[in-house]
Length: 102
Image (cartoon, rainbow, N blue to C red; front, side, top):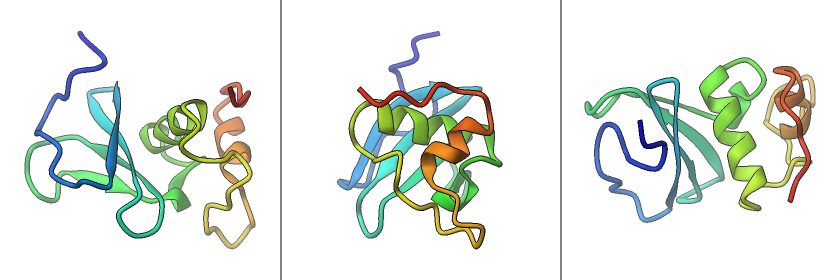
C-alpha cells in the first residue's frame, strides 16, 4: 500500500497537510484554527478523530503528531492541552517512539 496516497477522501481544508496513512487511517496536521492532528478512517463527514489532547493515548493521532514533528510542522515541546501538562514529545514517548526532531 502506498503510504502517500489518501485512502478515503480528497483533502477539502486548505489548512490541512496530509502526512500519509497508518493503520488504515489518513493522517493530517491542520492549522485552520488551532494546530491539531486528525486521523480519518472513512469517507463520511464524521469518520475521523482529532485533537492534540489525545496524543499519547490514541495510536493514530500520536503517529500523526510524530510525523508532523519529524516534518518540522509541530514542535515536540508544544503542550497538548491535557490537564497533566503533557507535551507532544512526552505523548509520543508513551508509545516508545523516538522523538528526535529533524
